Length: 177
Image (cartoon, rainbow, N blue to C red; front, side, top):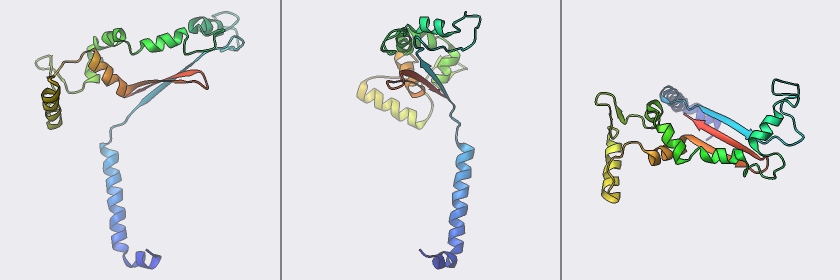
């Protein structure tokens, strides 16, 4: 298409531009925001200081405390340290069961399944939910299950991730919601 063709069909071009602007405006209005929180955990080496000035923690600043907590002082791998153990516990059954004991957290993980009137858990209303429930019942023999540890772990994997970077020897924890 040349410039002459574009000028000759300016009405079609302007209609396409307006349709694109309208589609962008509709997407901006109806799009749900996604917030991401990220935390990076790294080991403090033997000769490194995290706080250069003296503090309430002593003359070494917070570095000696962080080394004691991480257990990484003198170790080659931060992944096998106490912090690595702590990060591994984040998705353990015990932690997830404690997490879903809190009603607000469980309602956030499973939106639309809590019925305030009858104060019970139920399948989400809607056509897609009904089709998925029928599929699970026919092929797996599983009917609706109220939130439990296994379901909460699956729901958390969509929102929470932990990665370990070998090059920088750091953990990165990300939570979206």
